[in-house]
Image (cartoon, rainbow, N blue to C red; front, side, top):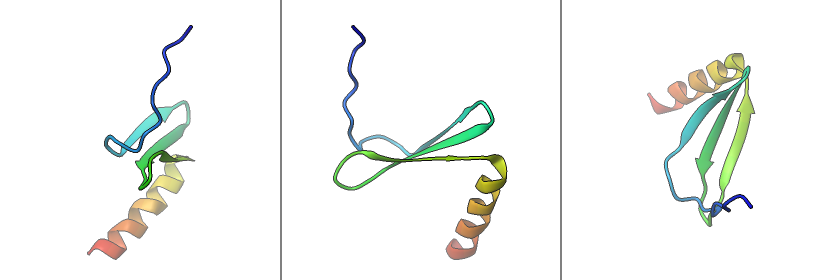
Length: 55
């Protein structure tokens, strides 16, 4: 039987590449993670939006 991993919000934000998709995992308050799947074009739009609001 495979080992079970705890589902907690602890840990860093991370992005991994799986095939043609980028998977963004963001820890959230209260435990768990928000998981987003996007392509490179969508990631570029997200980058531009974040840069606009942080400058």
